[in-house]
Length: 349
Ligand SMILES: Nc1ncnc2c1ncn2[C@@H]1O[C@H](COP(=O)(O)OP(=O)(O)OP(=O)(O)O)[C@@H](O)[C@H]1O
Ligand SMILES: [Mg+2]
Image (cartoon, rainbow, N blue to C red; front, side):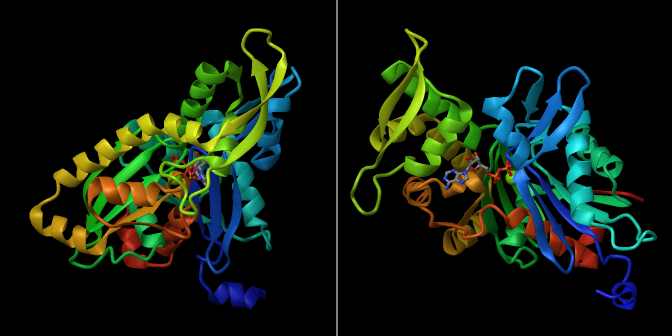
């Protein structure tokens, strides 16, 4: 883009949308789309507290960190657990995304999001971290609203839309109509808890200890909540640590066992979604029965979850093809819509 093109595009030329998630952080730029999609992990030098790496590079260090380094997840349950580390991670991502083209280029305006269940202190922390990390102005919206916009649900229409966003840390459920959230709830149980459930089950069943990354790989490769549609079960070989001998051991994991381990956390989610739907007024409820429920977030990609929720809720549930990117795409849409920007939950003066 030439300087004149950039100048004519207005001050919003390099504005950014950020989905600061428990598991993944995504950054998108107006006019360009998604430029960063990396795990929310930071590698830190223990003695100096210096940030050594963020994102993919830091995640790869988790299970292989030399004694001198630690790899941290600065967000837990959808909110900031370590403020300084979150800010360092955000500013690394923002700087990488900004790739300033001109020295006089202004700092970007940034639209970010927070879970519905966040307290005002938790919301303020995300807001401050975004400013500190390099935003000229910051705006926050609720995560399920962003997800619904990203998935092109008719959020401003006088009809009820329902979203279930299962991330790494939280499951957000919201019913949206006329541009606002009518009912919402947030459960601090999502993809990470599925990983923990798998690890615990395998420990009890096979006497083997596995790390969080292995549990996640098992979930993504052979995890499911209903039998697979092709009727065939899966298995995979993993290596873990024998609980008794503390020696490394290889075992074959069966998909039926993984399914059994996921039953309890998923049923807790189902109860939570049912409870939120029950709070809806009858008109919106009938819209939702007609329109169906959007399932989004990485956790929503678990095999069979859309079919299982459809059975349990007796409402059609469809999983978004862009489950991992809807939130950041929705934040980008807010940036590109001046009226939406004015209605954001929290914004700089
Ligand atoms: N194909 C898949 N099957 C099952 N789970 C998956 C799949 N792909 C990703 N996940 C899980 O999705 C979760 C990450 O999803 P996402 O990126 O939406 O979370 P997040 O936005 O970072 O978290 P949160 O919204 O809770 O802060 C992880 O737990 C990951 O293991
Ligand atoms: Mg999320």
